[in-house]
Length: 175
Image 1 (spheres, rainbow, N blue to C red):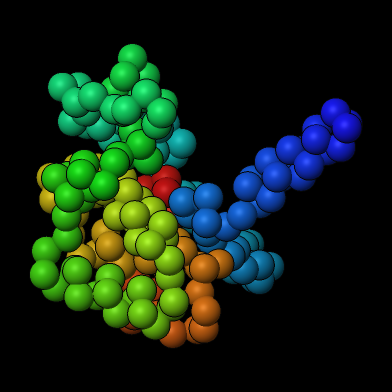
Image 2: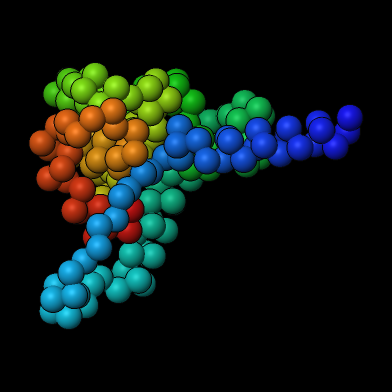
C-alpha cells in the first residue's frame, strides 16, 4: 500500500511539474540559420544583464519590504521576495494595467483562450519586465511582451500584433 501511495504521489508531483500552467514563461526557440549565426555581432555582455537583474531584484525587495505574505505562499521571513509571489491584492496594487493595456490583455485572454492562472502570470511577468526596464508602472509594451511569453498556452495562432513586436526586446533584457 505504501509503495502504491508513494508512486501515486510521485506521479502527481511530476504532473504538477510538467503542467504548463505552473510555468511563468513559455518560449519556443526557432533555430537560427547558419548564415545569420556566422554574421552575428557580439551581444550585450552578461555582466550588464546581471546588473540589470540585480537592480530589478532590489526594486522588488524594496517594494515588498513592508508587506506580509501568508505563510502558505512561502514568503522569506513572511514577506514576498519577488514578483512571482504576489497575491491577487498585490497584483492590483503593483501590476494594475491601464485601460488600454487591460483591453489588450482581455483580447489576448479571449483569443488565446488563456486561463485565470495565465492572467495572473502575465501580470507578474509584466511587472518583472517593467522592473528590468526601471519603469515604475506596468505599461502596454510590458503586457504585450508578457503575453508573448505565454507561447505554449495558445489555443490558436492569433496573437495581438503588439505582443509579437515586443518579444524580440526580451532577450536584450535577460528575460
